[in-house]
Structures are given as C-alpha cells and as structure tokens.
Image (cartoon, rainbow, N blue to C red; front, side):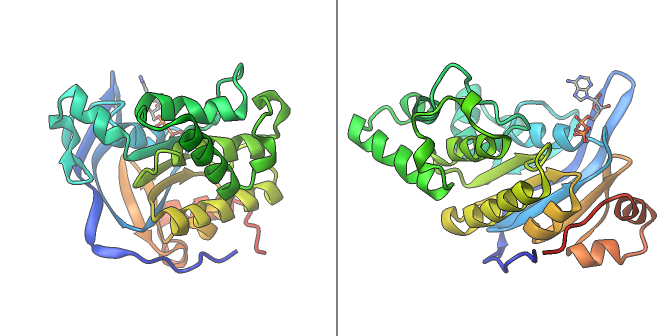
Length: 259
Ligand SMILES: Nc1ncnc2c1ncn2[C@@H]1O[C@H](COP(=O)(O)OP(=O)(O)OP(=O)(O)O)[C@@H](O)[C@H]1O
C-alpha cells in the first residue's frame, strides 16, 4: 500500500529535537540527534535493534531525561517543565506501547473508561459512554466493547490500545512497533488504521518499526538511525535509493509486502 497524501503544515513543528544526547552507563545511545515532526505528518523511525528508537520516543514523552540537547513538544521544552506541566503536556501525546498495555482484568469498555475518569472527570456517564462507543467505532471494534483483552486477537488488542490513546484526542501519536508480532494481513489493517487516525484526528505521529511495509505504508517521511543519529531521511524511495550503506543493509534483509 502506498501512503495516502497527508495535509502537512511545514511551518509548524510539533516536535523539534536538537543535539540530543542520551547514554546509559558506558553505552552512548543517542549522540547528537536532530528531528522535526511537522503538524499532520507521520515520521517513521527505522533502526536496528538497540539503535535507540524506544529511547527516543521515551525522551519525547518525558519518560526519560536527556543528558543534553533540547526537545520541544507542542512548543514546550519538556526538560524545563514542572511535573504538573509535564503531566498536562503528556495528555497531548498518545503512546501506543509495543504490547498494547491493556489492563487484563478490565473489559474493553473499562480499559477505555479509565483514562477518561482520570483525565476528563467532568464528563457524565452518558458522555463517557458516547466517547467510548465513538472511538471504538473509529477503530472498527464496536462489537467488542464488553470483551476481556484475553478474548481479543493481537490485532484487536492493538486497536483497543490505539482507541485508548485516541479517547483523550492527542495531538501527537507515538507508535512503538505497531505491527510487531502480527501477520502481514493484520499488519496491513493496522497500517491502514494508522493512516485513518492521521486523517480523522489530525494527529502528527512518530512511528518506530523494523517493518518496511509499515514504513512505506504509513510514513510521509522515513528516518534511519545509525550510530546515535539519523544517517538518512526523506521519502521511502529517497531513503532506500540514497546509496546509504545502512539503508541498503536494512532493505536487503526486509520483506516488503506490496499490495
Ligand atoms: N533504562 C535503561 N537503562 C539502561 N540501558 C537502557 C535503558 N533503556 C535502553 N537502554 C539501552 O539503550 C539501547 C537502545 O535501546 P532501545 O530500546 O531504544 O533500542 P531499540 O532501537 O528500540 O531496539 P529494538 O528495536 O530491539 O526495540 C540498548 O542498548 C538498551 O539496552
């Protein structure tokens, strides 16, 4: 699948990262990374295992602190924010964790109600119910409202995970390997959903993945990490026709589904 064109505002960077460094003990993970994510844009971040993709999105979400460099999210420099202000900013960010991170002992409805009760306490019971039904409809899972996570397939769990982040209407989505562990057809459905989310909710997104089909299908721009920074970025074709040695290795060992 080819990425449908998006409405991107190049004058408006919702994430701006400059000179980002992050180390753990003796490992230098990010070594001076720069990145802009524009309003309405999906950027796919590719990189080998251990190259720092998850560290990058945890830094963006304020879950880790940088050693140096700046990260501006929605106009705020996150390192400078008080805990309360960071909490407020986080409401603008939807984070889809690799394992979807659903509460196993709660139904789908309860999983979606949880963030609403915590963060939108003013809503009435009826308004909460309407919000849950609307978001489930938008991810194609209205019928599963009373199911337990154990009764759902991997793809359905991802959909509920996406619904749970969307219910707070985030401006920015961070997808951590959204197709990992899914078969190619279900992965294709998730890629389609990521693009629908971009259009319906006007989100900007960072999508980290190893999956080049996902990159090609969902990325308005693709950026490849090597040695702690981006070695090449551009459209999918630009990156993989660039002649960059890391991009070539990445491409040669991937299986791309062309539908
Ligand atoms: N909290 C932490 N403490 C110590 N080291 C960490 C921590 N988080 C990440 N690392 C290290 O940082 C490096 C980058 O990890 P990261 O999870 O970002 O890789 P990744 O590119 O997401 O890999 P994968 O594709 O396998 O998920 C790894 O060497 C990892 O061991």
